Image 1: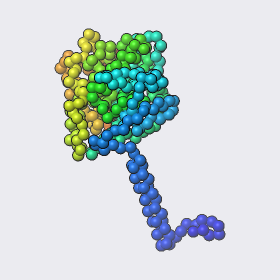
Image 2: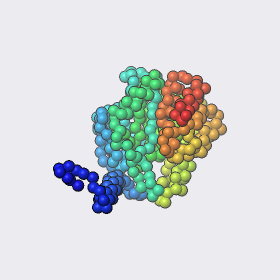
Image 3: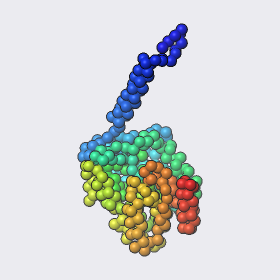
Image 4: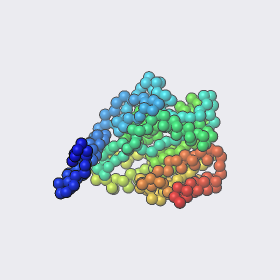
Length: 353
C-alpha cells in the first residue's frame, strides 16, 4: 500500500492473499517462460526429414548456428574457398566443406600435428526427438581458436580442431554421424591438411563420438603415431543397442553404422601407435563396459593400450575431453607411459579429493 507517498508493506489477511497471489503470478510467469523456451528449441521428431540450407561462415566471435547442426548444410567448392581453413573433400561422388581451427602451424612443414575431434552436439529424447545440446550456440570460431592455442602451448606442437560434418562450421549432415561417410570425410580432410602443411605424423584426440572417428582413423592410416580416446564411442553397435532399449521409438539403422572395434586388426604395427583410453566406470552416456571391450580387443590383437580410469566432473560422468587432450600433449612431448599414467591419475585425484 502507498501511505503519504511511501510504499508500505501490506499486512493482515488481505496482505496474505496479495502475497500468495504475487507468488502464484511469479510461478505462472516462470512456467510460461520455461514453456516458451521449450517451444523455441529446435527439434526434429523421429523420422522427420531435415531441411538443409547453405553453409553459414561464422567468423571471429560469431556463434555457430544450431539449425545447421540439426538439419545439415550444403556447400560447394567455390564457397569452400571463402571458408577460413576450409577443405573441400569428396567421398562417393559427394563433397563437403570441412573447416579446421588451428594454432601454431608453419606454412611450409609441420612434422607432428595434434588433431582433436569433438563429441556429438545432437541429442535424443526417449521418443527419439532430436535436438542440439544447450550451449552450442554460444561457441564461436574465436573460442575454438583459443582452445587450440592452449593445447598447442601444452603440447609444444601445432594443433587443429577438425570440425566433423554438420558441426562447428563444416557442411554436411550430423544426423548421419557414425556412418562410413563421416569417417572417410575426416580421413580425406587429414590428407588435405597433410598436403597443405607438410605434415608427417598426426597425434589424435577424440572425445565421445569424436573418439569413434579417431579410433576409425587408427584402423586405416599409417601416419598416426598416437591417439588419446576419452569417454569414446568405440563399440558403436553395442552402445546403440544399449540406448535403443531405453527409447520408446527406435530410429537407428544399426547396419549403417561403422564400428571401430570390428577393425582393430587393421591398425598398423610398423610402428605401433601409442593408444591411451580414458574411462569413467560410471559413464552414463557411453557405458564403461563398451570401452573396456575395445581395450580387450586391442590387447587380444597384440597392442598394449594404456587404460586409465578417471572420474569425470559433470553429472553424466562423461566429460573427459580435457584429460584426453592432456594425454595427447604428453605423448607429443615424448613422455613415457608410466609418467602419463601417473600424471593422469594425479589429475583425477586432484579433481576428486
